[in-house]
Image (cartoon, rainbow, N blue to C red; front, side, top):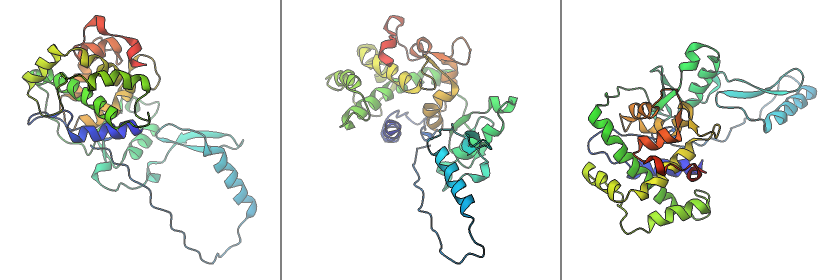
Length: 300
């Protein structure tokens, strides 16, 4: 999670500086809008007189139920409850039980073009629709309230990978520079990024022209191979199977869409065979890597 927080900071900092165009990511990261972690306020308990005596038996039973759910993990949109057999189970969360949004930065937009107060409200709602056609098609689209996204022109779509590649490279370099205790990158990852970081020919982060980015990719192609693989590995987590689903792409695309209006079309194009999954080979091709340079060992 810490990696994604730094990831978002990098986005907000300099990353894909697109001259007067698209871009705006990260949240979900939602940002799906920049990601902001909102801390919970301590619960205030007022001590007063009780009108009725407390049933100790019920109190012990409630505590036991809480203990059973303490380390029982449920996916987003679900909460743990104990059934009559005293067995913990995951059930859909009631959207009305989600904490109220602190501001617009917590809002998210669904693929149904509806603004939800927060990601909690969205996933709770999606859970209640499980098993339905509407629920199957509903995904988190991007961070922030729903808004008009300009259509992505063909010329703009061709320019998108130029900035994206440069951005991924700079994100990795930034993580390398800030990583003091291997919480952001493993030792093996740091060795690979070190070669990029110390290369005198590395194009420094900044608002570069598209011509310069294209020239740098051609002249310093090897610097971009690992960043493209690394990002795929970061996203391929649920499960780790060599394919990216819409849900796995969400941490990246959700915060990107508000900033880069070609994001959705770009990832749709990556799915060359239109099977709703993006394989490593398809991902690499989207970023202009040569077929012989696709290496599954680089995403581990």
